[in-house]
Length: 516
Image (cartoon, rainbow, N blue to C red; front, side, top):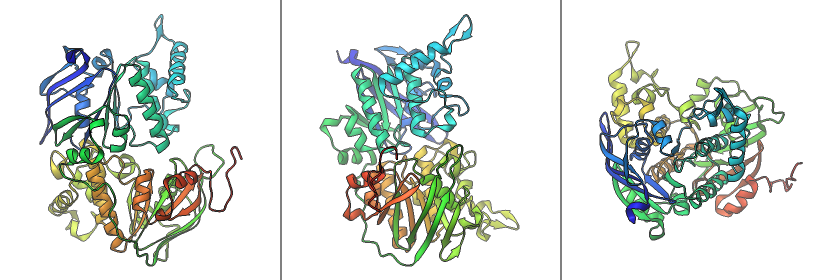
């Protein structure tokens, strides 16, 4: 009976890359109608294992069985034919195509050799209605939010009638509300008999939706447990191999001089929107404190940071340590601030450069990295090795690894290593722990607190409510481009914070009226 209830078996899978065994003799069994979580640190081999199942990689050893029969999955078309679908961590969508075109691409309905979009539209609309995955089918992908893009990826799987659904870090780019919706959708799929493999390192989510968890560590399988028989602390110990502190350990802040002063700051909206993306915002950040900008994604946080760092045009005043930077260039502003950007691929890394080159992107002009007018390769290598060691950045070939080939979490660690080591008076950290495992989050939180205690001013932007509450000394809530409240994390609750974030409450006492 046990044999029959496994819809997928991956037996003794080994996958190697230059310098690293990503999957080392891993066995994973997925039962019909279950949500099975795959948990592990950044670079533990989770995405690689799922890419083997989806046909993106071929394993060196091991077999895959579906319903007890051995199958060969040479490419994603074979996977689709077997009913296997995958939502990737970094979405595989064509930005200039519409939502509908992306969903049907590669599985088009044709009639007499011509594309028949009418039938495809009907099917997508029915799926969208049935699972509550509302999307604008005629919008271009480049114009919709990341949460919407994920819905498009899910509809892509459903359109192909897949029965085995792989979600690779599906909540890394979602707001708390979108995460709740996704969890409900996943449970609905399982109820209907679909089988789900759910890659995550967010312990709350795994405990909330998964039936079983398989834990990977450094490419090996540590074990599989039922979620009802375990807890978050036990799972984090399995995952990291040591006890992990799940709360941030920090002394009370001792704010000093004002480092960043922002006055009447406005960032115009892009496109056809009449409302400013950021409207008349003023705030300060002092040395020795962590000020967090909280809010539901899309309320102006991204534009505020782009305006501050010079990536977007803005009006108003920015002073850094008393110096007016309102009209300074991006490089001019970068002399006084470190910036951990929201989008690690677009603004954080040059993906086809080596890791060592990425680590000196803003510093190669410094005398220490120069030799007779040329970059001193030896100095760059030594510096990169120091940061890789210090921040535990894992990669197959060390400093010469191409950044694109690293796991998302290790790409993030590389950016954080580079920015914190620059030793600037202001650290702007946007979603610094997005896509990181508990061990890495514990380390990054510790680093940010250490920077604060050394007298740095930290401006943090986070969508993770736990992180907002535990890491910040002051919380500024943004709603529709304005700061609607300033809260003390020690004197507020997640519920009250949620009311400000949803626009139901404001510091000036005004209640937002629906449709006003």
